[in-house]
Length: 496
Image (cartoon, rainbow, N blue to C red; front, side, top):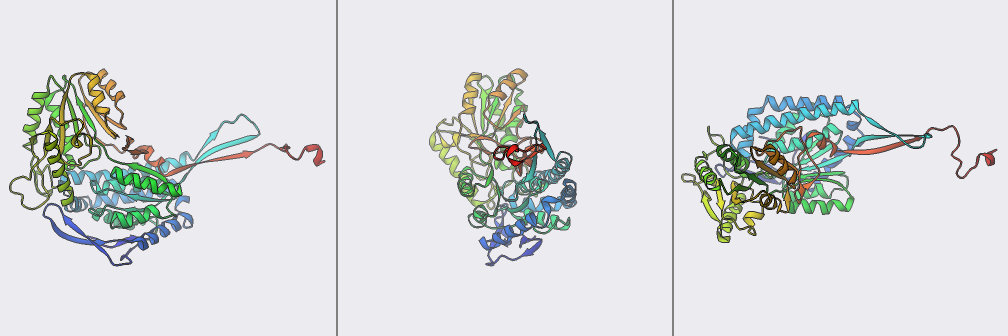
């Protein structure tokens, strides 16, 4: 396991020598210590990224050459996939098959953006038709500059890839700050990039507290772009801070996503997708479909099956074979979710199953997957993101009621609908006020498709070509081509 900062192509100790503990959430044991960066370290990283962008020529490379580095990083991740996935489990707690899937997706993300980098060579500019024949004009896209990326702890390597890959493809340089709780695989990404020969300063990784290292990135005047995934309150602070320097900002924030199940849905299929939508990654997913609305005609039968199957989920250490639900990421997260469940009880909700520590798990941040019913619409459990394996289920009577309940949220990241009636499913999908909509499923995520939300769920889109656009500026270049003088101030006759 690596422990130092990666700045300007070198592994360095933090200026003030601080460290952070790495705790295995399955055992609560301290398994490692990593560097805790301060503003001094961030300044070195930003200056390295600035030099790599302004003087060393990274943005001047062809897209094809940048693509070569991206593909080498993808190959390096795949070559160590099982090793990196194991580190992800030790750091985050998720089951190994989920971590393995995440690591493979991260490699695929670098491959995808390598392809888009090559396309930048094929389509470097766009001619603009003008009404005045004396001028020609074109629009060109250029990298923004130095990108400061701050990522969460729920998908450590994958979230790094979602930001680093498009930024490098566009020609930006990057200072990445992984979550304090889960930095191990981001440091391995630095090692992979180093082995791939990525020029020094192009990617810098600083670990440490968000309030110190993260804030230093946000405040640094030589950072041109901020990309953040995390909570709404932190996103709001980042947006306010960025306003001082008019930094470009993209934010992927929280959610309280609905899942509407109609009476014609297959109950077993619906239960499977409901569970996948909320229990995958221990429910620590911004897009988790945590508000389930079920038509009253099948509500009782579906709830019974959901409780039955939820109680069968195998809980355990993410490295144990067959585990489908690992521990939560930290004691703080565990305490917050237990508190949220207790708050729901006090507000009048019924705990249909779960909500307690499973038997036989005296250590580790384990929590039984939880189904809440009778949740009041004005309660925090219904309105606020819990970010854990907790789902709220209630019935509805009409399509109009379902849409109204689904959209009655300050969030708008994702939404799902399940029905055998294609026309109805499309109608509901169109009515959802959300940036991501799933029909007859929940949570499939593809690098090729845009990802982001409406309302308080964020600004901008990641993934697909939209993710590349996050790191590009558009420049207009207009040329006067006429041989005749312009003649506004100096008239042709006067010149003679």
